[in-house]
Image (cartoon, rainbow, N blue to C red; front, side, top):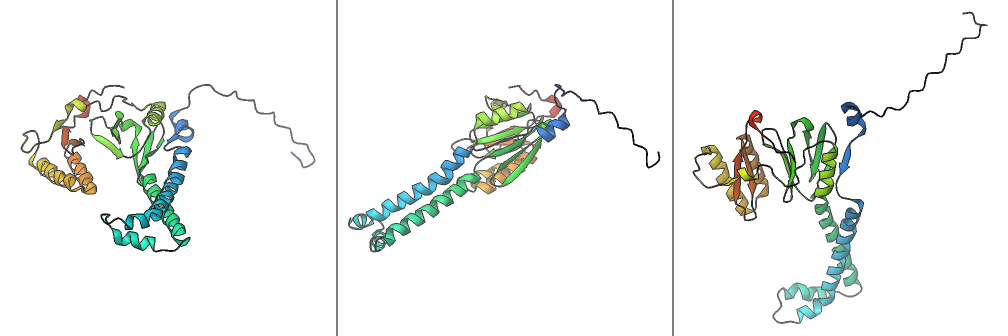
Length: 265
């Protein structure tokens, strides 16, 4: 073609109709994920409610400080006398400010107790207290609520994740089911397998009994971090642990994946 020739115009590309076929797994991964957690309203109540309650509570306490200090049987009379001696309006301003700060601190720690999730057809990323755990969909055999815990089980019935925190079970169930995860509305499908731990049970190894004893001590002392680490150690031995309201430990053994018959829910 010479420079004075007019190039041929390419024919317009044919319009491709939008497909009504389901998205592939790759397309779902990129475009179809569900984020679930506390609503905007819940967060607003948290971050506005606690500071207001804190401010009102300390303001009321400061106003009643003189009356409490006048009661001969009242405890902590020294601090109440000190509060009552502060001049107004400094006392009211300080009590409201301190109460607001205390309320914000409570809201901060309560926020970290929320469980949030980013769920897709390939994996679920679950976050609580600033720590995120990712579980592949293919590895997940059951999802359920156990009290204040969100639990995901593997095909060998071992716990892949146990997260303790605040979450709306209905919203989480809908999100998991939307992406094909086996949500169990009735709770743990293997709940009947648990037995209460007592020393010298023959079905447990000596190492497992030692961990249970150490964990019982941690639970009694309220050492939650140690108790959780010992739970993980027991999980490495193939032992699943759950605690009742009285801090008694219950256990079951994991099953070989090929022998597992996971109930559907």
